[in-house]
Amino acid sequence: MSNIRNFCIIAHIDHGKSTLADRLIQKGRLVEDRNFKNQILDNMDIERERGITIKSQAVCIPYTGSDGKEYKLNLVDTPGHVDFSYEVSRAINSCEGALLLVDATQGVQAQTLSNMYLALEHDLEIIPVINKIDMQAADIPAAKAQIEKDLGLDASTSLQISAKTGLGVDELFEAIIERIPEPDGAASAPLRALIFDCHYDLYRGVIIHLRIFDGTIKKGMKIRFMSNGAEYDVETAGVFKLGLVETNELSAGDVGYFIAGIKTVSDVRVGDTVTGAELPCEVPLPGFREIKPVVFSSVYPVDSNDYEELKISIDKLKLNDASLIYEKDTSAALGFGFRCGFLGLLHLEIIQERLEREFDQSVIFTAPSVKYKVRMRTGEDVMIDNPTDYPDEGRVESAEEPYIRAAIITPTTFLGNIMTLCLEKRGVQTNMTYLDEKRVEIVYDMPLAEVLFDFYDRLKSTSRGYASFDYDVTGYKPTDLVKLDILLNGKVVDALSQLVFRANAYDRARIVCERLVDEIPRQQFKIPIQGAIGSQIIARETVHALRKDVTAKCYGGDVTRKRKLLEKQKEGKKRMRMVGDVELPQNAFLAVLKTKED
Image 1 (cartoon, helix red, strand yellow):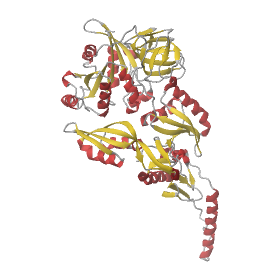
Image 2 (image 1 turned 180 degrees about the horizontal axis):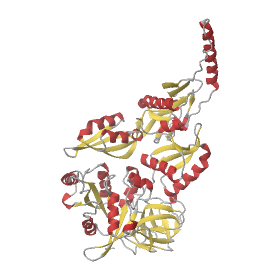
Image 3 (image 1 turned 120 degrees about the horizontal axis):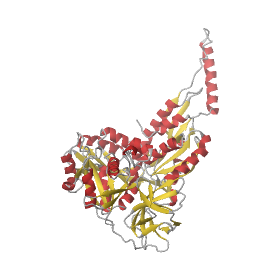
Image 4 (image 1 turned 180 degrees about the vertical axis):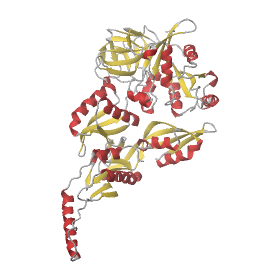
């Protein structure tokens, strides 16, 4: 165990985490140069295109130290986005040390801070690393000052590297060996291991990624999951070296995988403790919790005949992503579909892209919403995430919505604009700290529903991309909630209904009505598009009728002849409007349900 080091890399988005992992893997000679590709730990096309890590990976890097000893360095790569913060916390929990990466051109940002606090909670040894020192815009003294002041770490112990060119990576290897403590634990004790991730293999079932704290796991052994008591026989175990390398045994301090014939990812819970069925440990490892979705949306096939294909696609996607939650749903306008729960907006976008790319599905997602807590006049509390389930206003006594603690780090130049944006989104400022002369951190209590629509895009455009944003859900607070219905020719289109804050209802209704006017084709009769709260109409637009020139044949004569023809046409259009049915085209749904409001 003295030759094992378990560590992770934590950083804000785009500070060079995956690039540094590439250099470490190349130095460890895990892959030949001809087979090497950038972001080698990122398996999905979406990860490569967006430059983000969605699925965390682990890799065991062999390294010969300057003292001549052979070391096993277990790198646990973590996702960078706030949606996946629980997975990040489990990955951090499986390590003894962390490389805290700070971009020399950007400095300390919001998720740098939140990830560092997460590492400190788990008592990790933190090595500050200043990356991108080869760039012209690099400001190393400023980055060091921020590490001292913002993070409270000793900047004199920080390392300076360029993950892109490999400069300083050899010194980083030595620092990992010297400064990160070796794992403790006893191989002879009862098995106690943490599941920090898993993935699905088409032929072998679920492959579980785990860190062993005590005991040994080996082929043929019977193990038990402590959260649900399920028992399985271990078929094989091993370590990650860009592929699966079987060792058939893992001991205390090791990071690796095991396969036990588990059929679906949802049978395995990230953060759970694995122990031996015959000789179990007494207490599970701390920190386990059920992952709960915070954003909800319905998904429908563009062609209702593709429902069965969509069902099969979502079932297959669920095999790979245990955090996706779904149930059957129906809509009068869109037919059969599914109501899905997501960890956040990025998670929703990724699922949408994977359905379209990997399974070739054309789908429509309804406007995302959050889960509201509604108190009925009968005293009963109901959790509602779907606008169609919202009861009549007369039966509702009060409603509560989820709030977040939003931390924004911005250059002082953009402070006024960002404060205006947060106030517009019903944010209440709770803290403001000047990190230095140029940067300030502001903390707001804000409704999660306000962040869902266009907050992130507007924050980036307002600050020219310099502001960084991080949030965590804090709990529920009272709100004035109403159900906004969209009526087309007097009929409610259920797929366009939304639950909104009363003061925002008019603006939201006006935007939807204006978009629909441009998308709905004109008919022989006038089509009113209305936004309504209950029976009160709060916004209206009209798609004007196509008119035939019925007076064209009248030349000369009394004006009453023309008037009679026009009245006859008017009567016909009135009858047509009463029996006419307006088809809402699919592109109209797509235009309305885009999350941007600009």
